[in-house]
Amino acid sequence: MNQQQQSIQGILSIAALICLAIGWFNLFSPEINHLLSRKVFYILIGASFFIQAPTLTNKNFVYAMYAAAGICVIGAFLPESSNLSWVKTVGLLGGIILSLSNRKR
Image (cartoon, rainbow, N blue to C red; front, side):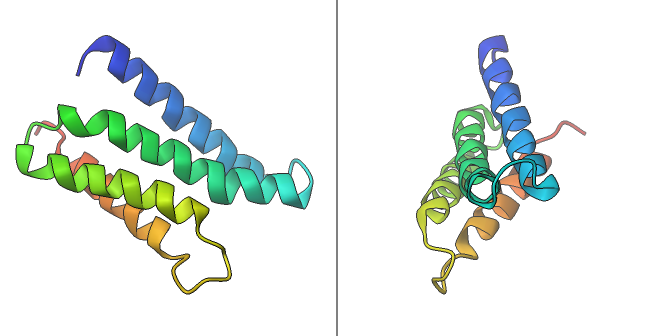
């Protein structure tokens, strides 16, 4: 991964964590907290996974990481009341597992 990709991915990840923290600590109105922690968080994480995908050393995981990124982003737009709102969490967990499996030992 080149330096620019690492920087962008780091910024996206930190921004996502800030969104999640805002939602946890209820720093704004309930609507803004919900938007940041339940929508923007997953969009930013999905974008981070998308940037990371082509850099995976195990090329078998590249498409899986793209899928995890897409699932996070698509899941962010699903209504919370739908039976599919859990999909974004599956994308998040899949992306994290793929990221961890890509670490050098």
